[in-house]
Length: 326
Image (cartoon, rainbow, N blue to C red; front, side, top):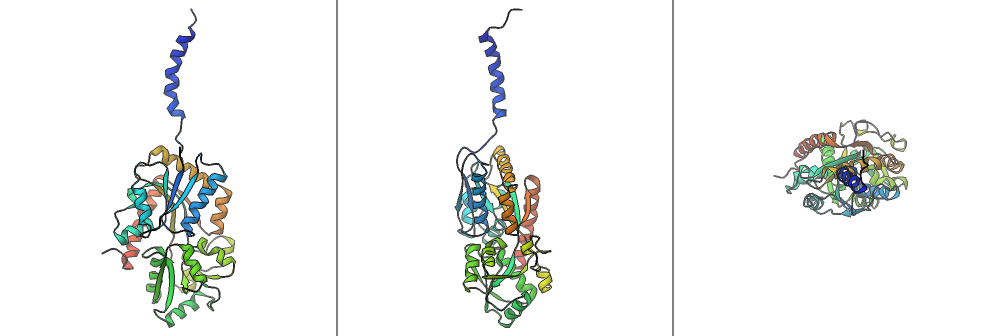
C-alpha cells in the first residue's frame, strides 16, 4: 500500500483536532470576578466576601482576581438590582443573606431571588443576643427583666430595617411581652461597635460580627437563637434562647452566592467547583469555626429547594411581625 503523503495526513487530522478542541477547553474567568456585597463594610457578608477573595488569591484557585464591591443602599436592594441588570454576565456574583427575601417582601422593590442564578450556599449563620460587658446583666433572664422594667426604653441595635435582626427583635417582643426601641445600622460591624460604645443596650449580631469585641472583653453573649448550643469549643457554653428564657426561638441566616440572570451554565459549574474548593481550605474552616457558622455547602437542586422553603418561612415571619409591604 502506498504511504499517505504528509499533506494528506494533516488534512485528515485537522478536522479531528478542531472537533475535539472545544470539548477540551473548559470555561474559566477571563477578567476580574466581582463579588457584590448588598450590605455595608465590616459585617458578616463583607467579611465572607473578602475572605473568599483572599483564599482565591492565596490558594491560586482563580486565574483572575476577585474584587469585592459594597452596595448597601435600600437594605441591599441597590446590590440586588445591580446584579439583576447584568443579565448573562459570567464575571459577577452577589453574596446573599436573608435580605434576599426580606428586602423585596418589605419594600416591594422589583426583585425576587428567581431573577438571579443560584450558585452555591456556603454556610448558615447564627444569631446571638449580646449586651455590653460593662453592664450588670450576666444572663438573658436578668436582661429581659431589665427590659420589662423599662418598657420602650431599651435600645436594640440591628442591621437594617425589616431584616433579620428586626425580625428576631420582634419575635423576642412577641414571645416575652417586651418592647424595644429598634435602631437600624448599615452593617453588622457598625452594630457591634455601637454596642461597645453603649449607644444601644443590646444586639442580636451574628457571632462573626462581634467575636473580636467578645475576645477583647467588650461584649457579653447571653443566648443563641438555635435549637442546640453552638458546637465550636469556645462557644459551647452559651445557652440557647429556649434554655435561657423558655422561648422556642431559633433562626439561621443564609450565607450564599447567586449570579446574574441567565448566567451561562459552564460558568455556574466553574463557580460551584471554585467555591467548593474554597470551603475545603484550612483558612475557610478556621473562619467557620471561629465565627460559629454551620458548614452547609449546597448547590443545584438542593440549594434551590432550601431557598424556596426559606422564602415561605420569611413571608410567614414578616407577616406575623407586620413587616410585609402593604
